[in-house]
Length: 346
Image 1 (cartoon, rainbow, N blue to C red):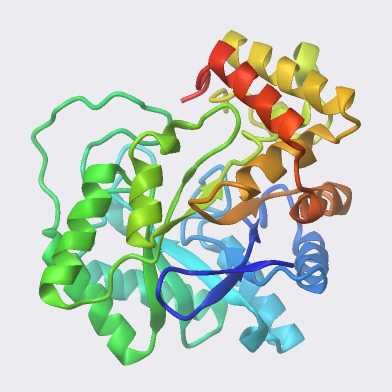
Image 2 (spheres, rainbow, N blue to C red):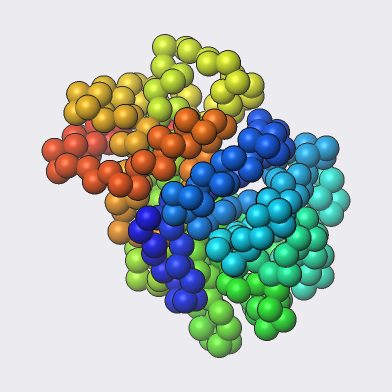
């Protein structure tokens, strides 16, 4: 599988990365092991997780995903073959009060405490990529496109950079990245890192898919010019772009069947766009999910596409997108649909 550089860190990651947030909720440890084995066999080396996972977040499953991955690493003895990415949760007292009282800050004390926990659960002495899961600032992420000015307090970027640099110096992380970040936040971190001579972010993990291409507005240029590539999450829009939910269908065991409140990609405009993309794929003899993923893979600002699956069959299909190069005719039709249905899901 194609490998791409993770910023200027010297680390190379597979164009397809494995998202793991279902482990410990929708997937049992045995199912997770099977997915991890298959992904590694197919050339995937990037495994992405977070201290918050499994999803949806619950105190009973918080950290369980990292524990499962840690068990797999220990039993398989393959730590040197994979790039492990995890995340420190941002503040959120309204919905994750069980993580450090819901008042995480990206300062030395909180970063060290969160990293201690992740390393213990992952049963490793270092992570390859440590990410700030979402900003401390009140800004537009998790489905909010517009920014509403707010009085808020957040850790100075310089202090966060120094805390991360200390962990890099200690050998506990190799590189760091952002997630759910804005152009302003990304460039402020980059400028501060350059001014202080400290490691700059190697990646930004934000949503990107055929239903939400808002990353192209502002962030794409930042990624390209600053060498801070996109790790695209939700590349299938919660599985919606596979077409399996069209017509109100709710397959047994599927995410939107189990968790109907996850409606970010399920509005009327998003469904109309999805139907158009699915028809396009089938007209060209393509699997809709593979077409959607291949489009994300092809973006010049992309480092890796983070796929998720609950079955090995889904995983096989998604992995196949790494070998799919979309014809110009398909790309042109994708753009035509995008013009008719621009970013129907935030």
